[in-house]
Every structure is written in structure tokens, then in C-alpha cells.
Image (cartoon, rainbow, N blue to C red):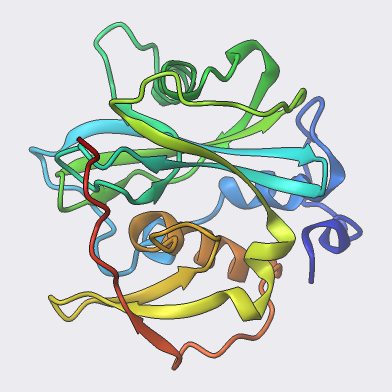
Amino acid sequence: MSPEASAGRAPADGPTPSGLPDWLVPLADLAGSVQAEQLAPRFPHPPPDARPAAVLICFADGEHGPELLLTERAPTLRNHAGQISFPGGACDPDDADAAATALREAQEEVGLDPAQVTVFGTLPTLWLPPSNFAVTPVLGYWSAPRRLEPVSAAEVGHVIHHPLRLLVDPDNRFSVEHPSGWRGPAFEIGTEMPLWGFTAGIISRLFERLGWAEPWDDTVTRALPEPPEASS
């Protein structure tokens, strides 16, 4: 079922966040009940020494229908170089909460105006082992979408406005296998590196729980390409 079609279902009891389109109401409902184990079954809970961080899962009504804001991380970064991710980063002492962190990072990375984003929930805090971050995903709806460009080239290589209908399309879904033996969902989005790992896992499991996912063949497995090299 597509995001647009799911909007026809009756929402759970409780108020609908102001300014939220109907197709996002099921996600707002889910945010209050989903468990960490349902989003990251392998590493659901951060250890005590994990560093607090937040990412912005930002939706918009784009030119080609509902879309998701993603970034391609700069190839020079120490962690997750060249990977596709949500905007976000480590919490600063001055940040009031995870939403403040996610909005600040999105503004610093891609120039997203926080005043144009309606925060409509947070997901459980999850552990990202390679960087030892305790990541809180923040759900946002961008009311005035426009084409964005990287503000910080040291952090972001490209900004991606990706239609949800292409993420849902089974032809764009497959599994990837890491040299370590880890295997998980991935999406083809037209970038050098596929969308995989932490970000793909959250998207895939949210789609399943929302009823947005279409049947796809998870036995189709591709090896991960090498991370892109930084240009001189």
C-alpha cells in the first residue's frame, strides 16, 4: 500500500499534529508505540558510553509526490564516508532536545529552515555501533520544500530529494552483504553507493510496519561497492 493510500485508514485515537498531511498520520500514530527492537533488532539499545546524536527523518510533498530528504555523506568523513543518510549528527550541550539537534544539523548541513519543519514525533533511541552513537530519529514534515544544496562540503557531498514511490518500488529493493558477514536491506536510488545500513534498516522496517512496503525479493543480494574516494 502506498503512503497516499494508507492515509485512507482510520487513525488511532488522539489529535492529528497540526499541519500534517493525511498520508503521514499513520506514522505519527506509530511513533508513540514502536519499540527499538522493531526498528533495529540486532543492536537496539546503546551502551552507557554511547554519544548522544539525532537524525531528521524529513518528509515533504514534493514535485513528484511524497518524498524523503537524504544526504550523501562526504567521501572525506572518518565515519560512514560516501554513505546515504538522514541529516543529523552529535548533540551539542546547548541543544534543548533531540529535535533541536536534528533541526540544527539539517540547517548546518543542507540549509533546511527549521521554521518550515513540523516535528511530529521521535522514534526510540538506537545504537549505531561503528561510531558508537546513541541516535534518536526525529520525524519531521517540511511544509515548503525546495531544492537544497550542501552547506558544508566537509560533511555532505549531495542532497537527495527522493520520491517515496521509488523507495517502495520492489525493483529498487535488494539485500547487501558486508565483508563482516552482516546482511541487510538496501535501496537503489541512483547514487554510487546504494542506500543501506542503519538508514535503510529504519526505512525498511517503518515501511513494513506502516503497510507501505510491497513484496520484494530479499534473496537478491549484492556486494557492497567500495566507498568513493575523495577528490584531490
